[in-house]
Image 1 (tube, rainbow, N blue to C red):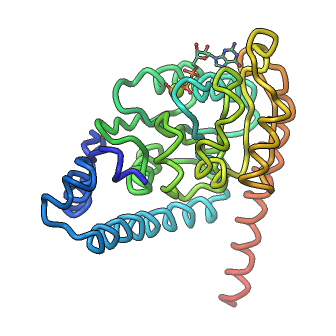
Image 2: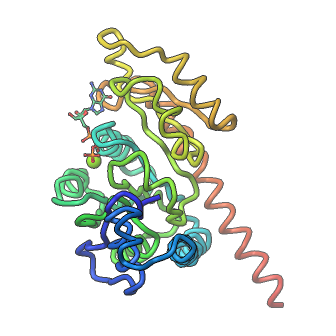
Length: 275
Ligand SMILES: Nc1nc2c(ncn2[C@@H]2O[C@H](COP(=O)(O)OP(=O)(O)OP(=O)(O)O)[C@@H](O)[C@H]2O)c(=O)[nH]1
Ligand SMILES: [Mg+2]
């Protein structure tokens, strides 16, 4: 997980993590040797890791509750840098204009480039800069949901920091984790980064327009993804040419309807229980 990769929690969003989180990240940032030098036993490090994830899960549950109550479908987009998350989002938002309310949370170490691109579509976006941090966590996302004032029955897209490792360990309270693998990255990535592909519900194989120019065996990519995650649902598409986007858009709308009716049913049950 993140704590072994040198990531520190220095993001510029308004909230601060507790001291222990920074402390743990700082020591893990120096690797095991650094942690031992700092006097932390392996058992203690494992405990700190558990505490970090436990705390994250509490925030994630709160985010999930908010989304469920408001019929919001939250998707956590994860991939290596440059796989096409922002391009896919921009084109998805343009296709959904006037069809469904949308909001976007953008995660990057630095710059507001991606949030700026999203805002050009007319959709509200909040940029979180994680500084040295290499993933979003549920606490950051909770604040961003408040800042965005996410409307009932919205699609909430969360673009995670480009990284195929650490975001796998952090539940943000999303309904689905959507992994994006572009055909320029090599078909073996699901085997090399199994945690991410095992955690994902959906796999988007992006940049299929480049298939004629690169050595990428798409059948193998599918088979490797299913090897680590037999239930993963796979779409092939090109965010730039629009090829395959129709299936993705249909899936989004169907899932949004499920979230909307789930919230309506919950409200109905609560009303019945109250009388
Ligand atoms: N040919 C082709 N290029 C694409 C496609 N999708 C994205 N790109 C290009 O890939 C590059 C990276 O795309 P981004 O959308 O910025 O990728 P990202 O995953 O958001 O990148 P980070 O936020 O930095 O992690 C850009 O030059 C895009 O134009 C696609 O389907 N086909
Ligand atoms: Mg991006």
